[in-house]
Amino acid sequence: MNNTFEEIKEALQYCQSIAIGGHQNPDGDAVGACFALAYALQKQGKNVSVILEEFSNKYDIIADKNLLLPKENYSNTAFDAFIALDSGDKQRLGEAQQIFDKARQKINIDHHISNTYFGQYNYVNSDASSTSEIIYQYLRDDAIFNQQIASALYAGILYDTAGFRHSSTSPMTMTAAAELMTYSIPANKIYTTFFDNRTFSELKLLGRAFEKAEKYFNGNVIYTFLTQQDIEQCCGTSKEVDSVVNFIKGVEGIKIACFIYQKGENEVKASFRGEDGFDVCKLAQNFGGGGHIKAAGCTIYSTIEQAWHNIQLKIAELF
Image (cartoon, rainbow, N blue to C red):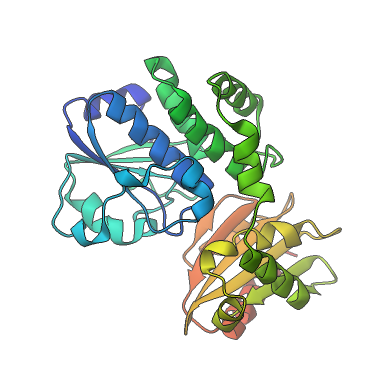
């Protein structure tokens, strides 16, 4: 059950030290929401730390890395409150779970339909385009926006809507983006950095993934993968493969897109995208993951070959 924004603000009123964390392998929405809220709480006189795993350098345009809590301090640091953003469940916080568990106030704000309401205070709105849009709504009555906060929120919204192209983009989303642009944010630079600029190694990884792509289920499903060897041979990192699934989803006639990359010898990350009528969130939940009806993911502890075999068995149930 959801709490109100007012209840959450009241819970934070007497908290001086606040941690803000997002999900593992943070994306633009997680980074944007975490830093926007951190900047806002700093303006309100709070001591704030952001707890995130290493993220892509492209997010440096909105992220003040001086706010990041060093990993060596995770075990010996306690906060009055921990605000979990963009995480469908506590496990998605990764190593930050230990800090979440120690906090006096535990708050969960998210937009994933699969959210487990794991906080003492929860606000989950699966109709919102992004967690950044929710944080915009949370902060808008506080008269606290400035260019730094607005840039982070705009970037998060932009990322999770794929440039306002996803069906989750609503009139409220566009209203939020329009207001945030009035704070003289570098909107064009954010868009270019997120969607047009890429490293040479990312380009090589995209090419390799495209070369391996195959269609299944009478041409309705597209699948591709990258091994650790692929990533190393392209001199890349796992932070540079997030865009693969969105590119292959754009192939004409595709109902479900699946991309898998190897994180460890027997650990793979799978990302799914679906068209209307194909709930890829339920697909991901079969493997302990989650997300949205049209965009979801999971981690599977097996070889790539076995993971894809098991995924196909579950995809077959959707046709």
